[in-house]
Length: 297
Image (cartoon, rainbow, N blue to C red):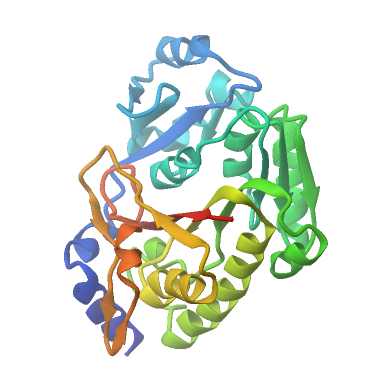
């Protein structure tokens, strides 16, 4: 039954999603500038790889999926000069424009890939992760990749705003979700109760993220799931709660995207949610949702 419900819901959003969910044609990585530089790519070429740079970033590359197991034995990987990360996730993190003096909050940070990106551009990053096991793996990840400007906190992100209201120049919230983008075959762990449970958690987290953001600052809310209850509905909830929240349209330099959904079943969301972005699975891109939000005074 869950399989049928899941597929029917996805078809209502965009039928092409189901066609591409199981296709893993390529994977992506970026240069870790704490340890690597342009010579990193040459070293990969010397070892027989043919990385293709994506058009919208100087330090992000794509390789065919058959190279995925082999690259972890490469010199660039073992020296932590590159970081393997999904292309949708990288684009979302790059969409948060970081200034050199910024203090950035990564509110659900593990395993830490986005914090690594922010740490290369910002003065300081605070990475929050509630799960103890994931938290310590994240700390080890930062150490291995040579980061010096990330503070880590093993805390529940829903309550961060109480201790640091309006502190951060930028905030990124890649919220815990039902992870529908990772379903590539039989539906086993997914159900509607899971979707509703995460939707409640995400609304608590986005309030904490927005309250932690300085006036005039920007944040990004993101998930790796398709359900509107976890995406547009969460943005609509925030807009209904705060008059000084504005969704800022993000222009994607690739075609596998669609705007946010305003109507879902019996619900009608704010017209502003159409400015959010859905990245459809394709090539090295996994399914993803993101919305950039500005906090006015």
